[in-house]
Image (cartoon, rainbow, N blue to C red; front, side, top):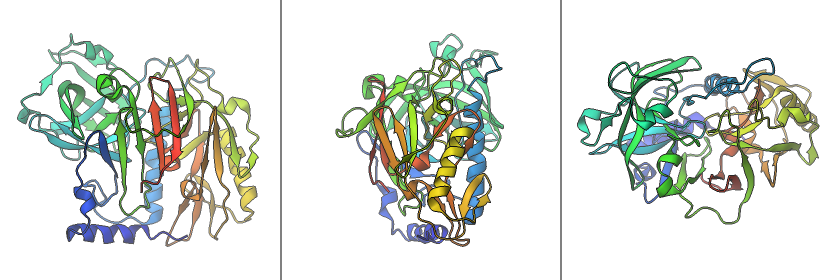
Length: 425
């Protein structure tokens, strides 16, 4: 099926300009927050000029690759000493939510990231920041944390050149630096006083989200930890498809209102990367046939960090080479089209219509079967269809394209994650 993606986007932008899309003005309520794709017509971060489908895919894939390389760098290789305490992961804002920070509140569109702990936003005077900055001088409840604060010791590599707790972090090809701070942060209608976050003063690199990151990991500075009394370390999200005209999903905070009829798989604990959401992937099915994958390719190894994580920030699912090759070859055999081409990092593309099989990720206690909309990228101009997966060096990552139009529940107190089909586009 052809998807006229960019013409549709511009039609929606025109409609917005004429006030014909009231969905952009819907207010957050209770503990339910709207989720916008970064290219949504409701998002001020959308591209200023159109990209071709190929340019868009290649740019997204390049940014995705940087994130996957960083995630994979957290996994110890056989010949390397296991890595030390991890750093927060900050990459492109694939999905964003509104957060009101300060008194009076200032709205920031923060990238929601399940593989990051601490939150951070660009602050006034930030060098290299590319978008709206939080003006801390205008907030009556803002304060900078000192070196003796307990939260300072929870940051990776804090420094104390003066009285403030400062940090300087590197990841991928980017760096961020700033002060550890606190202010009232409101999600939907729930204010969280004295929320700890990084107030950025300097950034360098192309992978820094313009208005910051909201960390949804399991670390001490994450939203789950700082709002434990409010949300009881439980949340879920439904990510809309990028093909949806509304691009609007929801982030549901707290145990109330979470799905009742849903299957779960246990969360696994990796002491070397305790923030990441590891799950036990036990097999993959293409169509009805289980793919022959070497057990070591998907096995969880807490001593190295190898295994499988669920991640909201990576766009395209990555499988370690032996697993990817096995799944790719099984997919090609089912498609039965001889002329296979490539596009960037995607090596299974077709220039003719195909009848693609489903792919099922088999976890302990839960199977997730993905239809074509979660598996295939379609071009309009070039009539190209690609399998939206790629190989990874050391870590399997279940990414957000494969999660779209599913409700994904993270129940940390019961150490489990659930997935159920839900149309939220």
